[in-house]
Length: 347
Image (cartoon, rainbow, N blue to C red; front, side, top):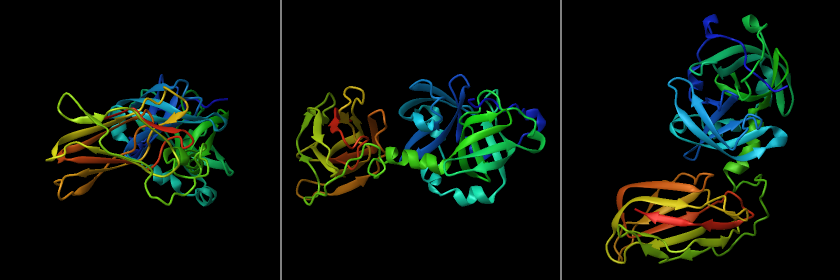
């Protein structure tokens, strides 16, 4: 039986868990919850696969209520897990670092007896936390039972995806319910194991990773001058860039001006991820700009978050000036496919 709403009302004196206010969101028509995490500048929502009944879902956080859209880009049906990229106001409320989930939870789960089940109350405004005991632990999951004043509470519709905490440590995501007073959770360290290779494709546990032959010649490809003038006198990619991904970084160099540095406010990198299942698009991108003169180049590093799983990256440069730009692709979302960049625009 899939997990449902825990019938516990705020009028019974539930404590509000402030740290979870930006970590949980209701999914769709209150069919469950999603756990929000931040990684390399992007917001992601993790939820049971059965809660992600569509590839595009609405999210709403607790007070102050903010909405967002979750685009599911990877599913693990056998583990009942799905991960999505979050856009909209809810993305700004992602505060929990993905790397916080890296800790091994075996010792903690075996040494404590209780914790709190956190979920968003039925009207979608408050985070509440119900006391519960951990009654069974194995390498993948654990089971809790409501205790104390909540011992007779029934697990009903909407609690799938709710998070169990020990103190302020998130230790599991609710997936199923053996009966109306117990719930089974997937351990949060196993969630990290399942998706860490997806969020960082350079790791060996990416499901599509293939052995990579080490290169001795440094960077993979360097392209200079592949630009065209735009309406505002700025430059962009003339044709789509396509290259076999070998695991070696791929560097693309753009010359915006052969003379003086020109204004540069924003860089947009795009690839349509749905056009061809044989292609991949960048994940981690390293950005440098040359703010010097032709006779004395001066390369400066610029911060850049990961390209989203939707194939879009926008980099605001802070109204700087640049003569050349280097985009170095350090990793891709699907390592066994051909790297494709459809569009690069400088504004």
